[in-house]
Length: 190
Image 1 (cartoon, helix red, strand yellow):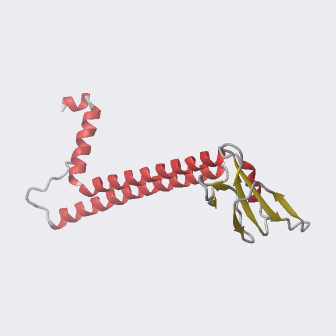
Image 2 (cartoon, rainbow, N blue to C red):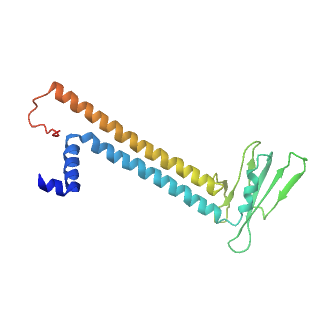
């Protein structure tokens, strides 16, 4: 129609509506793809938040423990004046066999196993300090994992859309072949 020629956006919208009505699986795939994309974005945001928490920690020097030469030792942590968390550790240096010590006010410890990397120590608030190792060590790690999550979500979304389109086209072809004169079945005009 002339109105359709003057309004290509409206024409495409109506064609998409008819196509979606003829291919209900595609609508389901769009929902799943949107969920996958949202999950990847949420994963990236969570990783960024973790990095922000680690970066703002007053004991960034604990990242020294990310070196591969750490053999044995333990973390020690405590709380200094104000809100500053004081972290210390002792590790054996395999180069000269002498221990290197970085000691705060100890109130807890966690073993370091041979060959493991323990880059960041964080201390929970409260009287009983719980120490754990955060795997996020740098903004590069966060960007890398966020990119992996976003890429995986985008790939998953594209795969769902493609699979749904192919499956919907296949089902339509089968219906056209085995049910050519179906009663009331809507068909997209070509």
